Image: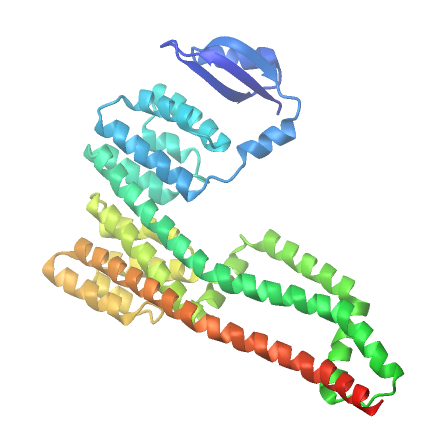
Length: 400
């Protein structure tokens, strides 16, 4: 459907820019008048495809964090919700988020609850987000809940930054080594080995192996590249399928070193989410149902589904957690202590804090170990080249 760009004034005489989908400009004018907008300018966008791409741009955790923090401040300041949302529209740079906030503010202005208006955009505001806002509305503690939510998003954002930062260095080094290796195999080795073969030099096994690998890349490199592209496209298309998500979740947990790190990450996300919901007055079983969606691993989601079912059947939370070996034993022990003391929310917060420190320590240890490992691998690579190429050339020069 075509997109029209408009400039208008609201009922309180504030200027606003936005986009509206309509078959014709006449229909667009009708839609804007229904919103009580006084139209200043209206034009149909020619590059519809580009405009839709803008509307589908990524909304980062940082964008969402800024939105929630600003909204919490406005609610705490007793600014009317509709006025606050419209103010945030003007302050938001992200095109997609801006358009969504326009729709949310219009729905709230039309009498819809904030949680229901947010629920219209599930790709941006997930079940956890919406239910927490709904809890704040029903309990009259919206500003407090929004601050809880902002804190949750910020901690999750910081955690993701730490994990991504831990992967960037080794990924960069490995990627550079692979690219350098391909360049050497395709361009350098063939020229050097051609000279050795013409001189009828005796080639050691390392040189023969290197020549074989080089020949494979030279003659089949294009097919290898096409195969990798096809696999990448297939994985991208199938990434959201249930089978792929289960397989991915399983492999993540079994991956050496990183598996433990990711397990701790899932425990942190779950504990924080559950703590935030329960602190907002959500019952345990319902909080379990909502929280499992923010974990980010299909295997753990399945575990928490079974935990929820056991809790609903009358089992204690700790006993339900203890059944699953994927969850660290310490978690169920601490939850059992919290249940006995009637302080489950506090214990969940402590669990999240403890494993956050464990993740930070694990990342530091991993980084300190990766540097010597990478240096050893680089040394082995250089050594292989010396043995396979330099040594035969040295012998050949000595024989001449």
